[in-house]
Each structure stands twice: as structure tokens, then as C-alpha cells.
Image (cartoon, rainbow, N blue to C red; front, side):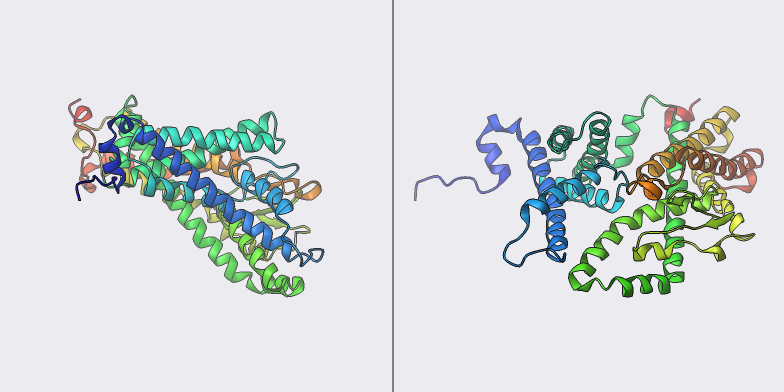
Length: 408
């Protein structure tokens, strides 16, 4: 009855061992990364095993773990932006899976601390670089692996730790991280994020309309493939992994330049130039000739509308009587710049090559698309902010700009 029992919770263990307390945040970040990597890789590995078991040459007497491991490693690295041979097209659904597992693991296991997020990000980076090097990736591929690890793993770790109840708000963290920038520029950056979110939502709705419009073509492809139930599972997961790519390409279609799925092809509002495509049912959702023409050419107006929404978002957070023309320029520049740069990154990440020959060119031109999105967002935001600044009595605004700027 007089013996002491061992602590049964992490908090109790830390209190019982004060020397462990200063290492607890770092160790929680390590444990979160171990879970995240194990979860995401196990999912890809099981998918690879199912795919190989369903192949005609597979034997029924053993599970092809070695071959599945090589395939899974390549796909897992590809989800982090690491090219594997001639395949550089990143399935964004795979990237989202890795980010989600990092987010969930950090939210569940990591302590809400910058040390936990930093340690987890460093370990995730080390793991991805180590796996890539062991897989034979060299040079620029390792640089892409580092960027992908920080964006996917680090992003998931940061978001997961900030999602905990005791963590500070994301907006507060962003304000501290960008504290050296003028508040009106920070407001413009947030407005650009609003415009990009609205454009992404429009793109997702458009892809849904494309899927419904092309369902007969997709059905014909599935019938011709006759994949069976195992092949059907693999095919469904593969298509889900590419749906985010199609959403990103759709934003290029709305903005104007369009995108390609193969060399010498073009899918844009100006017209459709098709060519031979892989037998993938999802590609039946690509827009046909009925989506181009006069009505389609007006699609950039939708991006201008997203810019107008961003301008309204920014103006609602300004004090009309204190706004000067340089402040207007900061807001508009931040909105257009953040939307344009983010679009360039997304289009670069969503495009690439799916092999050699015709499939070496897939996606939209990142610089052209980003430039047009920035210009269209600028037009829409300026239409609202400039009009509100010159005629403030027609707009109702609410100031949430920091007090330090309001006193200027």
C-alpha cells in the first residue's frame, strides 16, 4: 500500500522527471514525424501491393513486398515533388495525403511549441533527403526533395501544432512572422489569399461540371479497360490523387492561358487542340470544344471578380479617413503579388512530365498564368478599393488594421 506507482500520463511523467521537461517539445515533434511518415508510406505501400497483386504476372503464392516497396518509395517521394526518372508530374493528392498525416500526427502528439514544430520539420527534411538519396536521387532532385519536405512535412507540423487549443491563432503567428512589413502590405497579402481561395473554389466547381459533362467518355474508358475490382480500386485512388492537379489546371483555364495534357495540345477558352491521351477515365473530364468560344473567353472576368472580393475584404479592414494613396498601392500590390506568386508555385507543382514523348508536357505555363492572375486580381481589387477611396460614403468599412498604423 505504501509503494509509489509510476506516472500514467505524459504530463505526470514530465513532472516526475524535471530533467526531461526541456526535451519534451522536441521529442513530441520527433514522435509526430515518426507517425506521419509511417502512416503516409504505409498507405502508399498497401496500394502498391494491391496493384501488383492485380497484375497478370503476379503469383498467388507470395506478396511482392520488394517490388511494392520500390514502387511505393518512388510514389511517396513523387508526392514530395521528387522526380523519379522521366516522371516529374506530382500527384497533388499524394502531397495532400502526406501533409494531412503530418497535420493529424502533430495535432495529436506534438506539444504546441515552436521547438516541436521546428524539430519535426528538421527530422522530416532529414528523412525525405535520406530516402531520396538512397533511391538514387542526386543534384537538383535533392533540392526539390528539400523544398517538398519543408512545404509538406513542415507545413503539416506547423498547422498541426497551431490547431491545438493552447496554441496561438494562425493570424497572430503570421502577423509576428511578417512584423517587419507595413500593416497595409500584410493586409494586401491576406486579401490576395482571399482572391486565390475564391479562384480555387471556382476551379473546383468547374472541374465538377467537367466531370458531369464528360461522364459518358469516362464510362467508355472504364468499360474498355475492364479493370476488375482490384484494378478498379487502384484506378480510383490514382484518379483521386490527380483531381487536385486538374483543379489547379482549371484555374489556368479560367484565367485565360489554359493548359496542356501532352505536347501540341491545348485546353483553353480560345479553343481546344486535342491529341492522343492515356486511357485514364479522369481525362474524360477534360473540356471539349463546347467549353470554348465567346462565352468561355469571358472567364477571366471571374478572376477579376475574385480580385473585387479581395478588394472588398481589404477595404472592410481599413479606416477610410486615414487611408492615403500610398496605402492603397500597398494593399493592391500585396493582393496582386501574393495571388500571382502563389499561382506560379501551384502551377509549377501541378505540372510536369508523365514520361517521354508526348506526355513530357503536362500542365500550364506557371509564369504566364501567375502573371495573368496577378493582373486580373489587381484590376478587380483596384475597382473596389480605388472607388471606395474616392467615394468613401458609398462603402461601409470596419477597421481592424493595427493601432500603430491607425495613428499615422
